[in-house]
Image 1: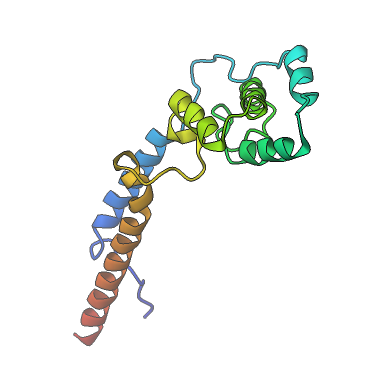
Image 2: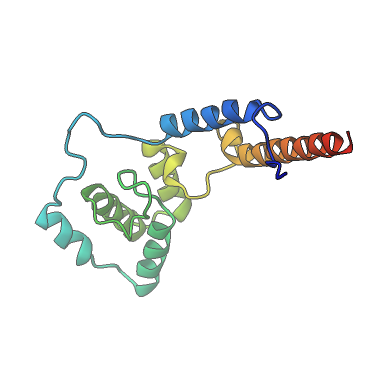
Length: 162
């Protein structure tokens, strides 16, 4: 006789855990259900000003590009300011270029972006009380699944002995 590895009565918390994870993912993932237009076509003047921006030196150009690669597009949420073609990203890329060209430091540009959009624009947010859950949740979830896995294996081993 072949026995299933996990029986529903042995693991009643799996249904609850699955429901909890589904709920969290549904709340966290943004959904546009109102029918509003999410992406707006970029103004040709904005595109031209971003693409033809003149820096004072090649070093500033390189620095601005590297900095823009570390900032997330608030509209796309999955791309940095360089990769994104959204109008918001083009506008922010131009702002980064202008700030670097005017002599702002990288930290000043990052502070401007985080004051406007929050830590969300950073691919690696700072470790602050507001981001503890973001940084520590994966470890707690890993510990939880490890604990549940060990408990399930021990339960199956005890049942096999009987």
